[in-house]
Amino acid sequence: MTDRIDTKLAELGLSLPEAAAPVAAYVSAVEAGGMLFLSGQLPFKDGQLVKGRLGENVSLEDGQEAAKLCGLMVVAQIRKALNGDLARVKRIVKLGVFVNSTADFTDQAKVANGASELMVALFGDIGRHARSAVGVPVLPLGAAVEVDAIIEIGTAL
Image (cartoon, rainbow, N blue to C red; front, top):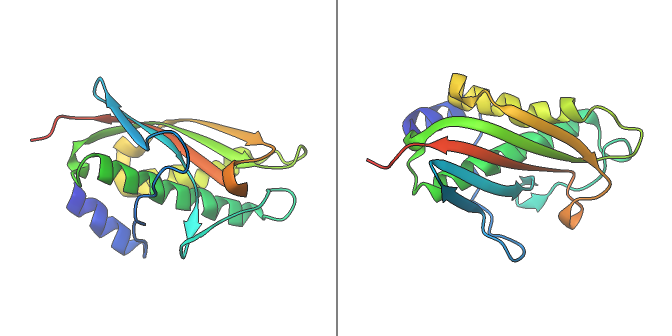
């Protein structure tokens, strides 16, 4: 599957970023009971954090792009946690999408589609997942979006 994901990324004109190091007292990924739990991932574009608030200074389209960038970081973290073996991914189980937004912004689900659609584009049917999409008044470092994930994984060959 790793080759398939790399091929799909190339077809989409995308590449995986370097998996970001934690910015506080936590780890990026925990493998337990056949599941991989990923900490929240932030959106980086050209090495810069995408900051701002939906409904204030970030458009819906830019929010969707930020969620997609978070999704790319999620895949980068999966690859790192599984020592490059994306073939171990059995299912993207759930994404949690947090949208830095004003009190009157109500399109968090549309923003979250940026990450969700990426998972389906890269992983096909096993990329279809349950999801939460919530608005929050602030995110770490002023990020526009944050995405965490739960992934079902198989054993290494």
